[in-house]
Amino acid sequence: FSDVNGLFASAVTSLAAMLLKVVVLESASGAYLDMNAELRAAGSASALAALVGGVAAHPTPDYVTALRQAGVRTRAVGVATIALTASVLASGLPLMNVLPRPLLGSLLMANGVELTKLWLWDARRWIDRPGFAMLFAMICSALLFGQTAAVLLGALCAVFLSHLRLSRANALKYHLTSRSCHPSASRPHHAQAFLRRHGGAIHLIGLEGFLYGGTVSRLSRYVLRASERHGREMRFVLLDLQATHGIEPSACTLLRRLRRQLKARGVSLLVAAASSQMVAALSPEPAAAGGGAVALSRTASITSQQGCESRASCGGAPATAALDSAVYRTVDEALESCEEQLLLLGSPVKSSHREGPSAFSTGGGGRHSGVSLAP
Image 1 (tube, rainbow, N blue to C red):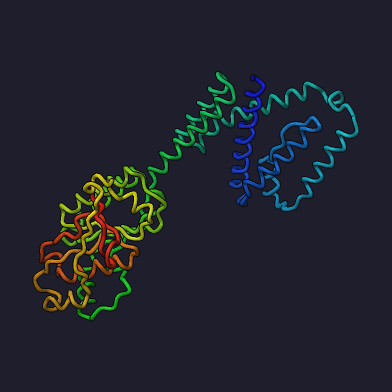
Image 2: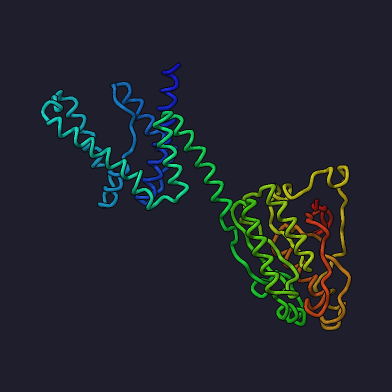
């Protein structure tokens, strides 16, 4: 059983060392390496070395980096090194008896001291504090409990730190107003002039990456500060989720809370280009939606020309209409719907804002009709 533990520890340690060395080679040389191909090559070389009593084969980042920096792009150096090593081993010369053993011992001690200094002191220059603490914990775990415990602790710490750093990442890709971006809809000249004057009423915010709870929390603070800056001019906040990969349940809760906070300030929060998985994540539980029956709500679809003609020169009293949906298939559809609503309601400064949909919703009847997603 102890032999099995040793083999498992050796396999895990060799795999982790191989992966780290490949990463080091990529960062040092600037070349892309196929991880699977490197693992297959190292495994095949290690299996052949084991048949003749050798040790596990791994790439040497220092030598490869030095050759790359010297401009060597061929395998001539590697082939020559293999041929020299094979010839020495095949000759049977007792080189260990020829070379002074104190010299060999001092070389090994120097290498050990250099590696210890590199990872226990010099590493603080390129590793942040959490990573440096993880490194110390792995070294202490290796001294106290063995290599297997150190590798397991390092893997757990790496996953935790990776999740923590991603949750602290800034997901904001861009922030524009409708003065800078317009839908493809064709509108009369007086409607276009009105939308240019009140372009600050619609804010388009693009997000990217995975939406964690911490990411959405910072986004909420950013949007609320923007709402305070623009005051009553801001009417709609449209989130472009096309470049996002997914969302946490806690982030969904924070988005709903942000919508309620914006609603109290007279601002509608909309979502566009969300994947089906994200829409499903934003959906409430069937019990919360009323015993499994989800009601469909649809308002009248208003075109820009009709909305503009319902008021005298886009400046009359606001009509009583609501946005058809709060989750749209594309950003263009969402912008068009926001502009239609803005044309219908008139100036965001002169008239009071009528809130759009009562909840996050997604297509369910008509182009913008939707299924309520509010909790």
